[in-house]
Length: 90
Image (tube, rainbow, N blue to C red; front, side, top):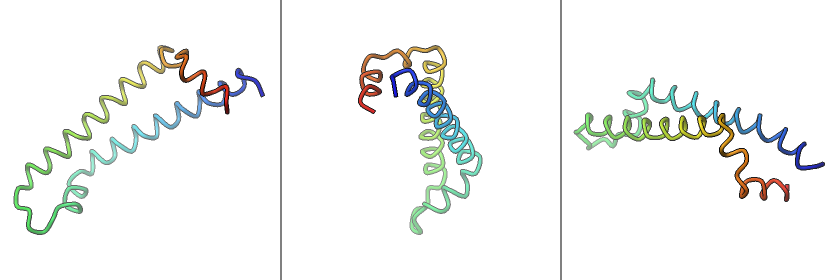
């Protein structure tokens, strides 16, 4: 099993993992009211602050995932020497 066959298997699986992560983040963002209410302590009164923190955290996660997806599709991370050296040992 050479490096080329390992890369041919890793690239589609990495893309599918990124897409699944994106779908999960967007679905959590859409259903944020339920998520905020489920993790809200009983005595916590400032619901808007908790909602804002939740939206900011998810937005940062989606933004960084989009950045990773763009660099992945441009091939910048495909030819990274550190990641290629990890593929040698698989």
